[in-house]
Length: 303
Image (cartoon, rainbow, N blue to C red; front, side):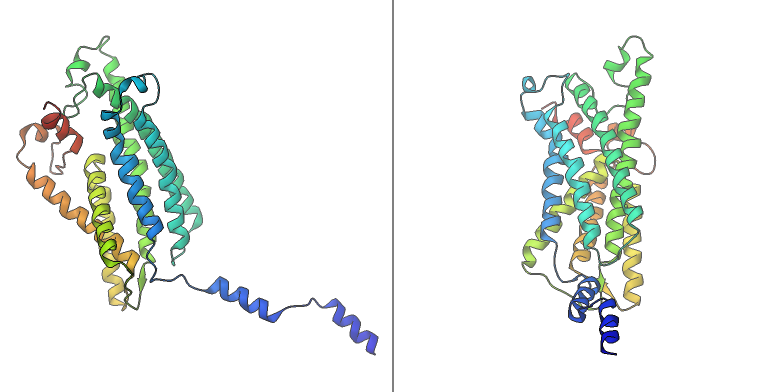
């Protein structure tokens, strides 16, 4: 009888109840809502200003002989760095979100983002070289003097196709998944208890810096419609969650206030240039949002 009992005991796997409970607690432990993601938000802000906004500025000040016209420019290398760091940050945001969305959908967003940003890299690289040769950004492709002198005239169609890939297709494939990723993360940024991070002043300063960058992104990228739809969805989510007794956590407030700052800055920008006849001609229609670099080539570059 004793041997039978031992056999049965040997056949049954040994389970450490304490280890099982520990593993279960690790898997089920919810992510904290009171921790501000300083590493990700600061990395995003620095690389956005340095590698996206700074691309054309670096190209203005770095000697052209260092980067010949038939090789990638310093701005192209900045764009390559942006195309790697930004999707990495978005993936890390997905990992830290308390609300886990579909992994497949998240991967599709990142893949589309990288493809769109890469299309833009090529188009923007050629466009920068055209500017060095006298191309005017505040004019359309066919209205540019250098295009009107091009032979044969059919080549202008190729540059219009390049413009379509650069400013329309590339931007949509770049920015739509970019803002969708932010919204998916924002959906999980709600809690029943208000949390306050440390270094509140620095947090607000970073929010203003991020909001100013998104203003540049919306105006220069001509993606106000994508941005405003995302912002309205975020506002609707705040109202719905408030009805359920939930409020934004610290990361949700940072993201929402950054987008709110962007909305205010875009409004001021449009009102300031509302009666400009030249920019009105290039940006016709009800949705009038001039690009900052068009303003630069029109008013600042000649001086």
